[in-house]
Image (cartoon, rainbow, N blue to C red; front, top):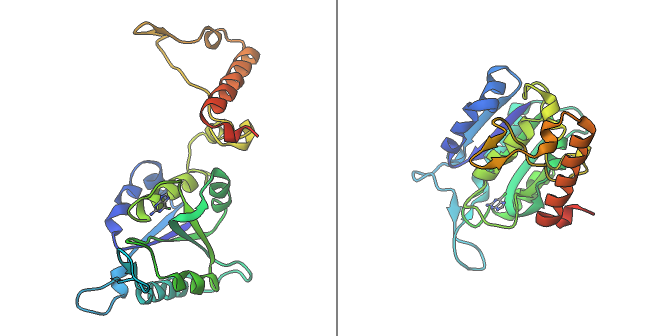
Length: 236
Ligand code: 6GU
């Protein structure tokens, strides 16, 4: 998979060199290109923002640098399979909620690009123009506000890349985790390791029993209980 990121803070993406994602890059499973939006400005101050039409607080990202950056991105892709538009994700607190289902869909894509806005957002015409050439999704991580799309892009990349075959050593560990279809989208049950007794807290007896049927039953009950307490919306 190829991932392109356009941002005014390319340094945000240094952690992609670490851990499982860094290993996936080393192993050739993933190719990450980070681009500085200011490379597509032409004034001495490398300006990327301006005041909003209609007034109001804050600044809006100018369309021209984004247009040139996305032109360059399309050119670098070369011809794509007919009918298959490249995926463009635009992190935004007003986007569609990012979920595990979307992560699973994205893990199948040959290439994904991120447009990381800052300030009060990007001139809306960039979205409209991009929709003609890309499969555009505005995505939100949840109902809170970040300063820009960079942290959201990092979170999305981590959730997608770990689903690419070969990235996680033991693919079975993907099966039973929270939000997975195999466990009815329930939250994950609590886990324990040695020692069996620690600071007066004991590992639940059933997990020491070696009785696989009873263990599976207990874990399922725990998942249902935790989900009904914390996320009743997932139970339907
Ligand atoms: Cl994707 N972007 C920003 N700026 N804020 C957010 C978000 C995204 N998701 C939640 N808050």
